[in-house]
Length: 195
Image (tube, rainbow, N blue to C red; front, side, top):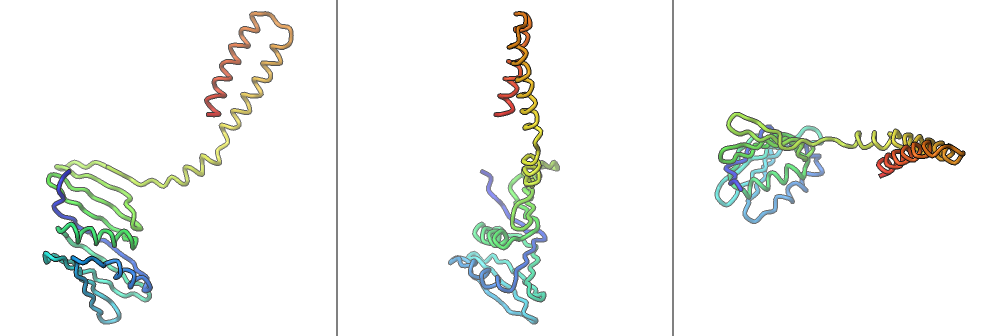
C-alpha cells in the first residue's frame, strides 16, 4: 500500500451551531495532540491543534449569529493530526475537497455533509473516477411504484387460461402440441418474471 506523503484540505468548510462547539472540543481529546482555544472579538474562536512533532493547524471559527463557520485550507503531513482533522470534518458534516498526496498519484475526495460524494485519482496528467455517490432513493421509489411486471404476469396468466381452455375442447393432436409449446414458453416467461 502506498505511503501517504501529505493531505491537503482545500476550501474545507464546517458550520457548527453554537450548541455544538463544546461537543466539537470534546472530540479533540487525543493525548498526543495539544488543543488551544483562543476567543477573539465578537465571540469568534481559533482552535489550534498541535501534535507532539510540532506540526499544527489553526481552525478559525468565525461567529455569525448563532453559527460558527470554519473555512480551512491547509496541508498536513502527520498521520495522527490528519486523521483527527478528517474525523472532525466528517463528524461535524464538513464540505469541501481533501487532496491525498501519494508518490506518483493524487486522490481528490469531494465531501458534502460529511460524506464522500466523489473520489478522483490523478496520475501523470490523466484522471479516473474511482467513486461517485448516487442517490438511489428516487430510482428505488420508481421501481417500487412501477407495476409493469405485475401487469405482464396478469396478461400471461390470462393467456395460459385461454390456452388451457382451448386444449380441453376436443382439438387435433397437432393443435395440442402447438398449444403445449406455447404453454411451455408462457410458463418459462412467468417463472422469470415472478423470480
